[in-house]
Image 1 (cartoon, rainbow, N blue to C red):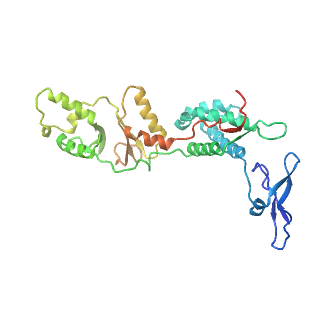
Image 2 (cartoon, rainbow, N blue to C red):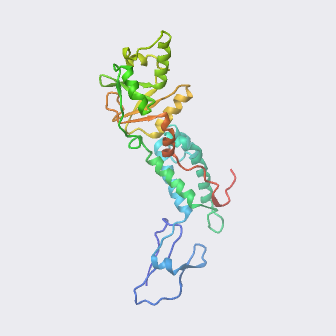
Image 3 (cartoon, helix red, strand yellow):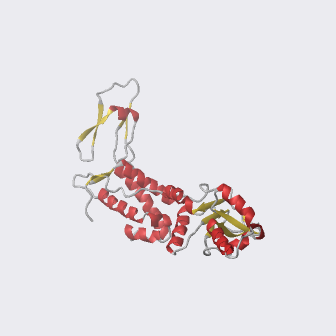
Length: 305
């Protein structure tokens, strides 16, 4: 009989595996080994026969946490002397993803501290539920490989020329239920025509009587834009979290960002390959969704802070 132990340090539970030839007798329903506390325990023969290595929830949690901590230190350039809370705050200055989950990360740190605090018998004081482990692992992946604007928002983007007649544009606009359309001039993105801008222009023209739409261009309507900066251009590699930040910053400033337009490298002279509007916020939030605060879902008692 050849006895094999799981690699030391990589697994929380060591399982003795019995590798028998067919001619070996079956001796009992279970194989015995000694646990960490010196007590003789049993490993079910089915697990022995299958050669299953079991990694505890706490071990998987600590692995994911260590990966996040390493990433945050790399982001912030902090050394090992910097405490985790301060590490999160420093990384949040550079990463919108970290900034978005700042509180969650700190609560996961509290759970980490509870897990690594051992009782006198050598057992972990708390074991996180599998759901908590999954959420942290998902957050670790999201922080290491944050979602980008493409391919999620890659699509054909229709645009109009600044010299086009406003009557032709409106005929194109409304049947398709568009609320905005990019405006080009000599191959360069120069503006975003929105239904709000058109309404403001029409209201201004109505003061002078009936409006002949065939006598006016898109450029005439653009002069009535509510405020400058209602659009911006990003590269296809831009982070979704940065796009979300752009909408939030505009809102905080009392302005409205109507659309983020996507080109290959973020230049307004390049072909449009995607568009993100304020109406896409739910889609962005779903893509950026990460674990909520699950640190209360543990088996064991969390020490009070």
